[in-house]
Amino acid sequence: MASSEERLRILQMVADGRITAEEGARLLEALRAGEPAAPPPAPARWLRVRVTDLNSGRDRVNINIPVGLVDVGLKMGARFVDESAGIDLGELTRAIQSGRRGKLLEVENPAEGERVEIFLE
Image (tube, rainbow, N blue to C red; front, side, top):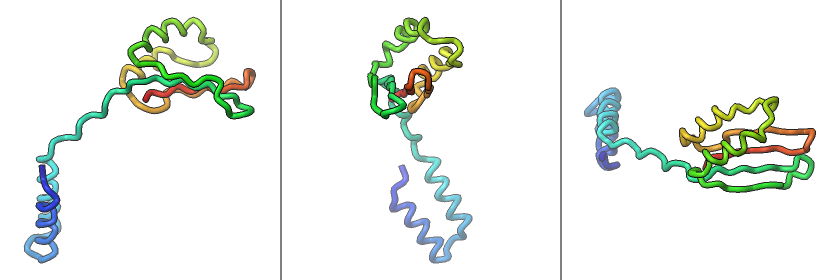
């Protein structure tokens, strides 16, 4: 792993005119290339479902579900999803399996006065 001291030496050589800026950039890139890649982020552990009242902004439901139980929950919950809502459960399942963190889904239902958000954390 390249130390900050090695980087500073290269920058000092450029400042002193001993090497050109292009040569310095190549040396810095070579140092960077020799560094190990950053470890991948830890896989998501929780699926959070939040249902919010649109009028008051208060949570009606805020629950965390271990990712290991999500497949079972999706299969059970699939029968309650209205097909006209435009939710693709297959796409949601793929997003969860990919481990992508962040908001996966947000749906507003003005008739019921609620917003449903699903996050992977």
